[in-house]
Length: 373
Image (tube, rainbow, N blue to C red; front, top):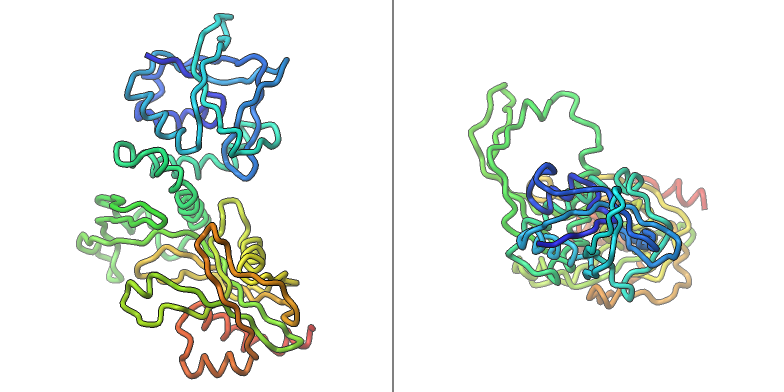
């Protein structure tokens, strides 16, 4: 049996129940404090760390008499965040001193930020963390903690994308609670991308419910796409990189000319993503952004939701971009005149849908952008 003190996100009872796979009334929990310690947020991450701090007291929950399966599930989940257990003495509400294990974040990897608040975390990150934990714990006994640590950023993108989709306006003519019935669901593949599968019925246009149908979706995230445009020189910047899905599909030209693009990180505005990716991939500072649409990229098979932008930039001088080595990017940049871009669109030399879409938006608004410049 093990006693563990939780100071961070596992103080959220719904999350603890999910990780341990049993309800609150079957967990021996009590309020406790860890003397001479304080809890801080981790910079850039939706979880906290705990640090020695003389005179401070870290509030938390003490879980007692946890079994071997409980400990294995906790170590799998917390191991994904690079946590290690340390034995310390905590104090219960009744004044008892109990030796308990505490998960500590690896100090060489994560940087502490501001003091951490459970209430603020629950408001800002609670729903996303619950979705991530559901996906993560589905891999228990199938993956190790190193695998989970690698997959967590993609899981967070998918969770944030799902919550963003849920926040968009509902169909005024349909009630999905009444018009869609889910019979079964599963996620047969989890990786950088994931695949979800459902057996479902939906209400047909004649008012009847359809037969049960099996459908799959590629789970991705939200993306920001920006076509850099210089209205003074009337030119655009394109990037070219190898796209493995085209090669896998059998295409003999998998090096693709396209706009700058990247996935939106959880908690990040799409505009921030567009500016960040422009610097990373092309060495460009964007002076302004024009929204060119908010669309699903392929409604028949993918959940990807794309924020399209035209990025106003000075293309006369720019530092080298080239992408991030950590992401395996190998990027070539090219500046085209507006006329050459549209000639390529008309001749169907470009086969990237976001490029075609942003180019056509630019054609409609080009005069206004040039007048403004």
